Length: 335
Image (cartoon, rainbow, N blue to C red; front, side):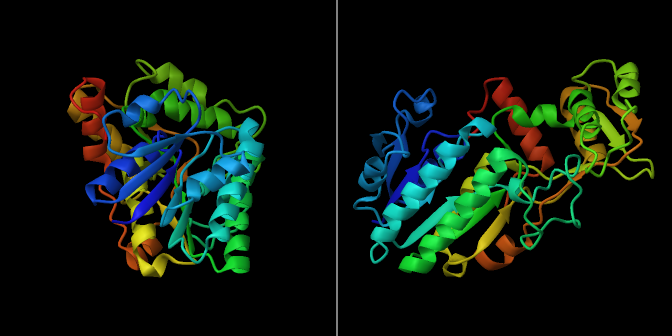
């Protein structure tokens, strides 16, 4: 039975990945920070847990010792965690490289922020955003993810370590998906874009496009069927944490994954008109039809992962929203 290390095992991706591995009869070791507030996500699961900080090279070496593969999901979101993310990835990659003759695979989780595909912040070079898109990370967090990729590649070159990298889109879990198609979320995008002159949605320093939307809306939670000035809907290609876990497993098991990088996203870019209609059907809330002066496109092409490693994301808009509502009602655990 292969023995696999999952770093960040209690994270929103890690805890779901652990479950998938156990269902496939892997022996699982997981790392947790001391006093990890999310440790309860692993309650009742049959895995070995190691408590420590991956910024300690000794702990990283201990965690890697005796395993056949490493899935590095440990991650802290936010600019203040730049040093933590870079050092933790360095220590894990270095420990794996020391055992490159034994480690079958290191799969490291990066982010679509390396491009970025946030077109309201920085105009994309083209759409859809694929793995060849220029890398222009904005801010310490996205930079930490790109540096993490380079660290993994460097150790692979110097040691022969077999590696794969995945770049998830915006990850949601639990009931988080419900807020992404609302007036409040659309308004936040419109507000943010006016502080980003290099974005695709910038209208000028004196423009306040969110004010009209707020005036028309019944509440910030109202579903928003937003289109652009040409009538084409806004689109959003996020990803459920369970699909990210599935993609990491594909990168672990597929021979074609070695030395490659893969985007992970939901099955397709989701139009806001469709999402709002689906949310309205499931909740009875009346959607607001709103034509914005700009059009937002947040996409992340997963064709390469589909064709090379068998990535088959399951969580399209209807099942995603239906399950998020079930989580809110206490009828689903979201795993």
